[in-house]
Length: 293
Image (cartoon, rainbow, N blue to C red; front, side, top):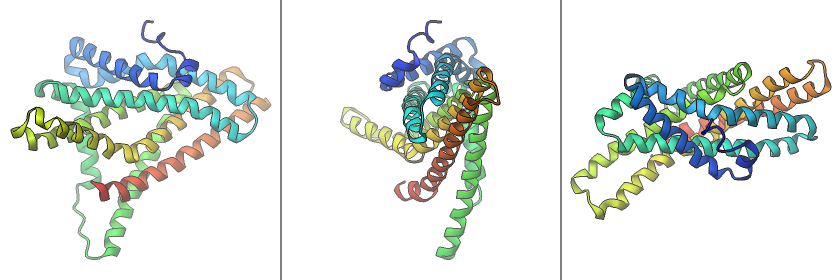
């Protein structure tokens, strides 16, 4: 009752940056409770506890957005109205990511392994599936073909996650927040691991004179995943919002009513927008990020 009452959907949309701090708070409390009570299963418990704290806000936001879909006219106006909720969710998500990555860096090594065990295994699995086989390119055509294969695999995997977000929101109301919180924990772990690996190279020269290097590497780690991560996560939130709106509409309205048809059209627009965002995110991940990093 305490955590879920800290912020309502209207206030969150007026001040979305406050959700960033709320995300950090939710994830940090969940991590410490997971370590304290369920140490051997902390990597999954911290996700569930974070989700439990966020569900009331997400569910109330779905109800608010469903009301807007009923009464606002014009697809552009609806998308603008929904954009406030999506921006607030993005700040919440990045609060989760920052908290998980920060605790990955701050916790002792033995606690890191137990706290983020499932996330570490997931990252290894993803890297093995996408990049396990070396790409041997004898020409520019071979390189483009290999990149196209990786692009299609990444895009198809992301579409699966998109469908999970829609289905979870449809059947569980605010269920998509579970998928997104899990992704936040995996991304936070990946960022933390990237930073720890790079910090090891300057550990022998550590000191106050190297504070700039620490901050630089942390910023670089965030930027590496933010390039394609922002449109990708925005797509998942958009799809989750669409599924949540449909779920609320089915509960509140006759399926043959004009309001329900209007809400279905609005949700379809959101899903199409989400697919386009995922396409752009996959392009960035395959063709832009490797050029920078």
